[in-house]
Length: 226
Length: 290
Image (cartoon, each protein chain N blue to C red):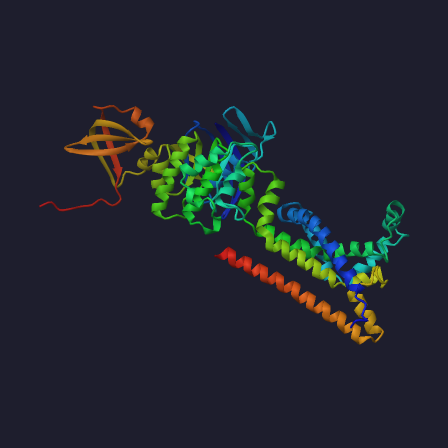
């Protein structure tokens, strides 16, 4: 196993970590808006957020590719203004992962917030506290299991993505060749031993991550019901 | 304090229009009495700023809190209110003490917390979390938390309905004590005649969004139909203040009867007055005398 190149894993976890951190920051306000808004646009936004769950990753990847290639409007703007090429680059993978994993972060947080009694937020405002203070000091601390679920699912889902990455990242070593792509390459090259090692590691890592989530949320539930 | 609210509300059996207006002597304890879905909770929510009326105004003291015409609508944060919710709404992530401290406004003197802990006897509970408290204890914490900011209005939405009788009695006393100590104008939603009697000096009966009667508990519950009513004439022999109520001692024939009265009624009575004592008796005891 010593001659196996583990760099795809470093890349995968770097991608998943960056994606998860950014998603956490943008999903909290988005989930907050979705759980409290009465706007008529809410179903539209909800649908858009949920699309990546059902859409084939290749479809998503294809449109991102079309949108971001340097001869397109967005892609051209990014390249001319920030010197950022978003196709076949690590930054492009981050961008695509953000879209692809968004529902896995937003939905647990949204349902966590919706399940809290409305009177908690109302009590906080009757005590003179702003919406922001209420969110940070009252609402979020009481949905910790949902936050954890969102973080873990978004992370695990980013680790596991394949189709989107293939479409817009290709398989450039140390840039876009993440673990799931590496497995595909190794199988194509008939290097079953390496493919097996990669796949095994992903399997174990995914199991451990999900196991921790269920363990923690189970414990939390027991604490609450005491 | 003056208010007038109009709003279309949805109820289980269709829409109805809430239309209330009232002028209230500050310092009163008013119970809102009536069937569920009559609009009692909606009135509290409008006073608190949690529900916006379609039209109307609300003036507390000299401050306008809401005016549809002048487009004034203070947020709940800006109104000086304390609310006790039906489900208590204690923050599960904080201890009892942290729940109280959370309510402090910036740079507020923390002594108010010590005072409340003392008044409501929360000393032993301070470092416990809400999920470990009984219903009555949660209720007391919610009451204390609602008063930390020294509000002008205290709004109680059926706070005692989930408690057993002994606990309810005890909490009623706490509420009365706080109402007086903190110079509050208190609104209490209640379904219970006894509670209305004990707690309030004014009761509003609500039906389908309208106030159908405003009176003292005594005149409300004694005015109704004639059947099953005892009436006697007698003479006042003593008027005595006890807590918030007055005990009037009356001589009826050869018997001495003690009757509860509120301040306004008591002020009209003096020793020697001829009075009518009436009482509804659903279940009089009849005993054969040998």
